[in-house]
Image 1 (cartoon, rainbow, N blue to C red):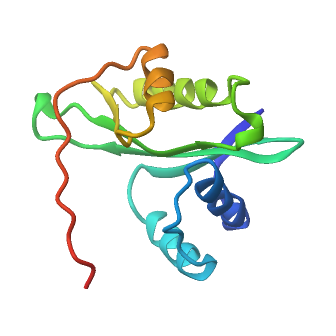
Image 2: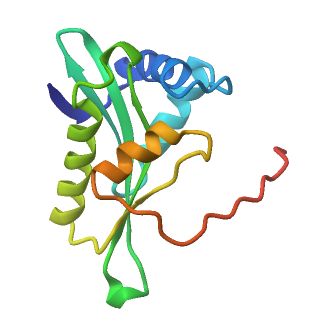
Length: 147
């Protein structure tokens, strides 16, 4: 398996992963996704990664490395939108993606890697805990109306 930064050519597969693996009905159009992807590439240390095999793109996640004023300026990492194609789940792909993200954070000198997961995703919670992630604090959400 190859883990690499995504390209625009990967975006249809990434959208399909969001639709199937994350069961997210709120998917952007390819045109909107491409525009947003281009914008994301201007952010320092924010990368959308894909996992690729002979079967094509089978996984994805985004990793953001943040500079912090607290913690003596030590950066931290945030993982978002972890998805593995349903027919490829249970084969260690998610584990390898998270190990890659952790290694990247260590290389960047991060003091932590965080992620959030929907309360309904009990299987995902067990998966993250099996990798050594632990529940920490509380997550609060305030949905804002889209203008």
